[in-house]
Length: 357
Ligand code: PMP
Image 1 (cartoon, helix red, strand yellow):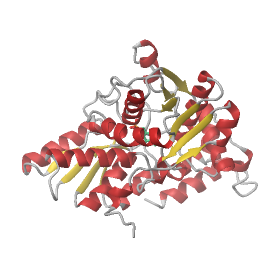
Image 2: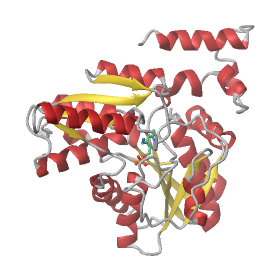
Image 3: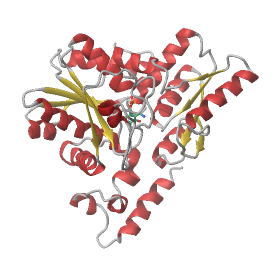
Image 4: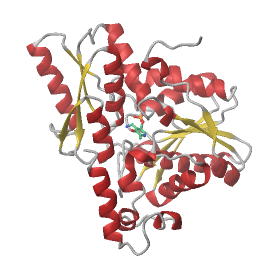
């Protein structure tokens, strides 16, 4: 028999998948870690587990305690599931701009979800500050009862990616990896994998694929945090340098528009069967750019961070995409009954998902 103890044992060790279109287009081996296969459906299960194990080891998270976090959704889902499996309550603060699918997914895990207005980090009402204050209040009432996970600035996040995601990529490619690229939210994935790979092979190129509207690509290139445009992708991009991102060994950085990344996510579903979210589209666009920068014959790795089903009302909604000026493939137009006006189609999709709440 081969049996694992619990949910935590099923996090990570994801397959490394060849991306056919991106490989054929560039003459490189373009590979992606299928992180959407984690038990909570995203790469953030790794972050959640790494933070929880570290807090348990330090004695900051005690038996029966409450996990408190501010999250765009996926980290919350990971924390809530790992919390359920290890006997913790979970309270999640998230911006009210996040997809209905992610909010619903969080609620059904049993987590307490508190939606707050989306405001910049410097505003004291940013969701991360709400979370910190809530943990402090719980600890003031009952000392030691709550733990603020602090995924953005708790560097146990990137350390866990270095020890797991980075080592897995190294082993699965048998050291033949030439470049790694992904978007950054907390920066944990990029910094952790970057450090792990550079430590083993200093000539590995590490690249940032930054969505439009994020200030990080500019920061890497010029040292100035500057942003323009916007993106429908969620969970990636930043207006500040987090502790996890700080010092990441990044060689190249690009700002990627939605018109480039979203069609790649659509194409991956229709031609290769992987239904991925918007951040994975940005990652694939980055992998193609890195492959072109290095030239044919190289091995490039990225991640498929989560599933497209989590963003159905946006990513697969022709009316929404038209509104944003993003190309809509013919098969997506045809997925709705003929003659349905664009607005009505948007409402059908939105109503279907509103029910999940
Ligand atoms: N993709 C998705 C879908 C995410 O939810 C996140 C994290 N918020 C990321 C990518 C970015 O990962 P990291 O926080 O490790 O930078």
